[in-house]
Structures are given as C-alpha cells and as structure tokens.
Image (cartoon, rainbow, N blue to C red; front, side, top):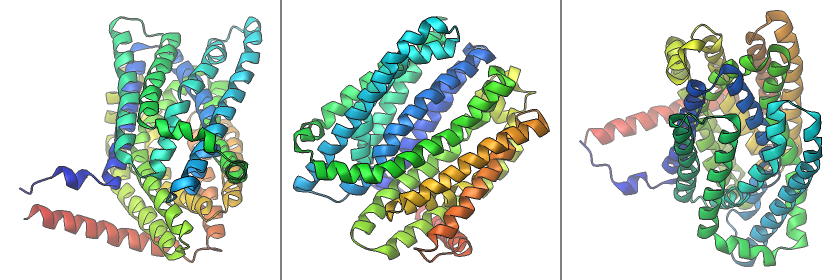
Length: 445
C-alpha cells in the first residue's frame, strides 16, 4: 500500500473539497436531527426562516464575496490593505442597514401571529450581524487560497451547531426558537475565532479608500443582483410551495433539496478554487488559462455526476429513509430527489459559465442570465403545480429554468471565450480518465 503523507493532502483542491464536504455532511446531520425531533409542519417553518436568512446573506455575499476575490487575489502591500479595509467598511455598512430595517419591523410584531414571521423579525438582524466577521474573513481566506483555515472555520461553525442541536434533542428542548437562538450563538463563536486569526484585516479599515470602494461597488452591484436573483431562484420554490401546498410540503421538498448538498460538495469546491485561479489569470491577462479552467472543471464535474445520478436513481428511497424518518417514506421525496439529480447534470457548465462571466468583468450578462432563470422558475412553479398539483410541478420548473440559464450563459460567453460544450465534455472525460489512471498507478507502487 502507498503511504499517504499529510503533505499530499495539503493542497487547495483537497482542502476546499474537505471544507465543502464538512459543510454538506453537517448540513445533512442537522437536517436529520430536525426531521426526527420536530413535526413535519415545524420542520417546514424552520426552513422557511432559514430561507429568509439566506436571502439576506445573498445580499451581503453577492455584493462583496466575488468582488473581494476579484480585487484582492494576487495583490500585495498597500493595494491589499485598501481592498481589505474597503470590504470591511462596505460589509459593516450593509449589515447595519439590514439591522435598522429589522429594528423598524419590530413594531409589526403586534399585528401578526404567524410564528416563523415573528421569529424572523425577532432574530433576523442579530443572526445577520453574528455572521458578519467570519463571512468577511472567509472571503479574504478564499482570495488567499488559505483553504486550511476555511476548513477549520467551517468545521467549527457547523460542528458546534450540530452539537448544540444534539443537546437540545437529548433534553427534549428542540423548538423553532431554541434552534434559531443556538444558531446565533454558534455564529458568534465562529466570528470570534475568525477575528482572532485575521485581526489585521479589521485594522485595515483605516486604509480604505473612496476609489477602491467605488470599484467594489460598481462591480458588486451586478454580482449582488446576480446572487440575490440566484438565491431567489432557490428560495422562491419554498415560498410558493408554502403558499400553495402548506408547510408540510415544504418539509417534504427540503429532504431532496438538502440531500442535493452532496452534489454541491465538489461543485462548490471546484468553483471556489477555479474562481480564485481565474481571477489571478485575468489580472495577468491570461485568457487562455481562464478557458482551460472553465473547460477542465466544468467537464470533469459533469462526467463525474453521471455515475452519481445512476446511484441516486437506484437508492433514492434508502437515502431518504436514512436521513429523514419513516413518515416520509411514502411521500414524493425520493422521486423528487431522482429528478433533481438529472437536472444537476446541467449544473457544472451553468455554474462555470456564470463565474467566468463575472471574472472577465461581464457581471451584467451573468445577472441577466439569473433573471431569466428566476422568471422561468417562478412562472414554471405556478404552471407545474397547476398541472401536477404536487411537488413534481416544482421539478418541472427547475428543469426548464436551469436549461434556459445554461443556453443563455453559453451563447453569451462564447462571444468572449471560444469553447464548445462538446469540447468541454471531451476534455472533462480525458481529465477524469487521466486522474483515475494516475490514482491507479500510485496505488500499484
């Protein structure tokens, strides 16, 4: 047997994959705790709250995460400190703006008895503030390609949440409000650690400049619109399902939706490492390398997803039973998971089309792509549910929305980068085969 040294694992691809793996596995464990300890309606309300928080995160992350990587990656000295300080200033300003809006909403509490709405008004601002420090540090670590610290932050944040939820389940104290409260506490813990590690980034606030903030703003306004629209693409399903089918249907749909996080493990990892690499290449005016990363990563992921889709088709019922509970066995959850996995075959190329458009400074086109997807998805939800009267109508909408985004992104990106889908798949296949052969040769030593 070959020796597996720690140094062989200390590379950005493995650490990014491990970080996203931890995120997905802990997410599934958290989901299981909720499904086994709460009623179907309560689980649906938790995910409703979570989607509201996700929309707020999409505003901050969309405005600044890609911009941070683009403008900070590969910089040094005074320019690096200007970018760091400007990012912190804009992130703090945006967070305080959401907090002020939330404070104004507190006066509406006497006019509603809707529990998830009440919980959202009470906890939105605090939860959003609690994640600010580790979010900013996370963007900077990503730009620095310091995936070791990213891995630790993710482990700390998600691991402490799982531990807290486990204690609540054992003590029979798992309620919607307790889950939200302990989510806030674990965010604060992670933020304290992030601040301790990268205190120098906060002190860079004094080095912010109007010019750099203007650069971040003008780029970020398009990536913000893209991120928010992309988040709405995912969360609009939840809002429409709750409105037309009720909170129980939300709980059922979130089983396959959350299980699709398994697909997101390699996708987020390749996107994260690919985006920072593309940013460095673009800043060095190396468009050929950008095309190479686009074709290699999108092609490899698509090829890798094919056997994963076959596996899900065969074992979807077992997977749903394992991560949820027996009361969901006869629901649409397993079949929805099968159908979503087929749609996922389009994800790699669609996602890399989007980030490539951002990196080559065409965020407006990426924004238009996501708007088209969002529009098709919302219209498709209403058409699909009117035709099927169940959750299969949602998958109907997701399929056509993803297909429309893929076509629009491909047609527009080809104006700037000469590549084909066929060529991308061929490169992906060759890269996967080469990787398998290298792995096989290594284990023969």
